[in-house]
Image 1 (cartoon, rainbow, N blue to C red):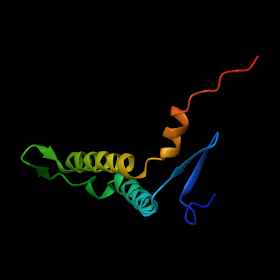
Image 2 (cartoon, rainbow, N blue to C red):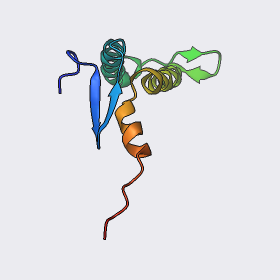
Image 3 (cartoon, one colour):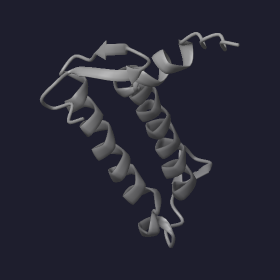
Image 4 (cartoon, rainbow, N blue to C red):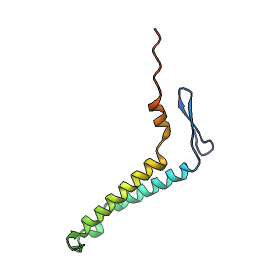
Length: 100
């Protein structure tokens, strides 16, 4: 189902969730930031640099500290703004009793 035309998402077993249209652009933005972080993860530009940050931290390690903080903030934003609620609804459904 193309959710850009309809914000009603069917979860099966007659359960439907209405998702605001504002989540779709946020989901795309999170994917864009994810791929940007993916590309920036391999910091080949710091490999030969022996600079020290804060008087004790090599610049390559400082880069990875900042990268880890950015990745955790991105994951927090993904959970808050783009988590697929249809999965939550499916997991919370009560299983039907088997008929004998």
